[in-house]
Image 1 (cartoon, rainbow, N blue to C red):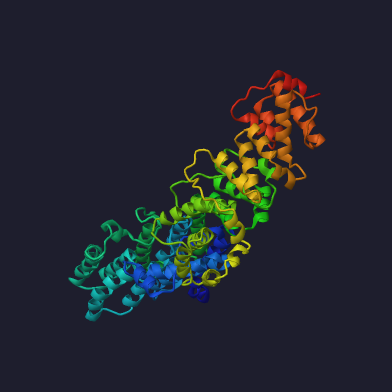
Image 2: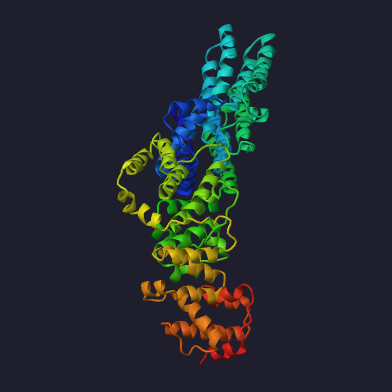
Length: 606
């Protein structure tokens, strides 16, 4: 039993780390990809000096360094595991010295409470890894200074150490001062029991105020942190709840150590079982409330678009159709990239044109997906604007390697080689994008213009480059139609044109676009939803399906006949939706009501 109790902190810590790894590896892998996309760690002196020039900069620099590995799912999960394990281990070292028996058992389990707050905080994709580094540094400093004894030299070191720790770790150094204040209040004698704790608290208060004279940031940020949350003007309460719980555990722990004999009389199995069950319940409900599965799904679709995993996107949509607009945009793009938009379009809900061609929103993540859509569509000018605005909107003012990569590509396509090199030089200072940047720089250095013209990506996009600016266009359908007329080889754009006309319920426009000679020459088989639309248009114009000039499947004609009969019978909308939700006909008549001639309804059966 003594051996088990002696190793209980290690056991509890390993269980915590296993749970953290499984959570991020199985439940939140694409949140980790998201972290990596929102920064661009560079191996350069300027980047290092710029990062450490603010309070908490060293913690932030280390946090950014490890974040670049997050695009590898298992590596990101492992790093988060080590960060949480580091906080737990340093917390135990800071408060759990020289204790045995049930007191050791209770302390090890109680220390899961701040881990619970940190875990809940980590469920938000804007919580930054720098906060774990800052906590580890503060707790390790507490451990080292508490073990230095009561020599007056320790207090001299304190005066020098706290401002340095504040600059290295940021305002979470306050935990160090609070723990040391509690320690001195217990250990010092006489007037020192009051003087030293007060000195600690004054250091915690006045250090940020003094730093305010050198750092051009609001005083509130210097007290609450610049690098713990992506939005510098927002602070989640969980970080400070974790700090408060560590201080509370330290006080309780030392109270129990003074009553060791009373605690040791308790059954260790009952104590450990009940306390562990309580912590598991608290963690479960806290994480369940903070867990964001919809955000994870949206990030997963975005990552698959970035990696051009079009078939995986369609397979994922078959298992569960998401409702998030960004997910629908990714699915529609995958349909077009695989040439299946005409057969799959209305297998997913199409609430409006934004699911096809998204409008710009003031945001730092949504325009990333939209920019990828316009880039694959061939509208490099619009893609460039979306990506640039997304990067400049990142709340903590970092740059994005993903954005730099796409901006370099759009400038290459547009012929702006000088600007492309500007972005590529930054990417050459990264760990995971430098090889790609070197390849693009070599491509730009080639004097032969045919090199770019024959490039598998840049060549076709340069031939179909859009010179007009559609960013603020009120009529995307017209603009897309003009673009397809000048670039008939762009099959993705052609599919978007036809799909946009269907989604907007503009049958005549759809038929006109479909009848373009370049499209008829390229398509021998009429896709499913195009058949449905062509049959409906013919029926509405001729009051009969006789004489259809298109190759329409017999089942399509029979389905349209039944649909029109059910509409005439005025079946309840719930029944119509259940029967026809995946048809173009239901979409066409579920929006703006269009008056259907009585002859067309009766003539559908002829």
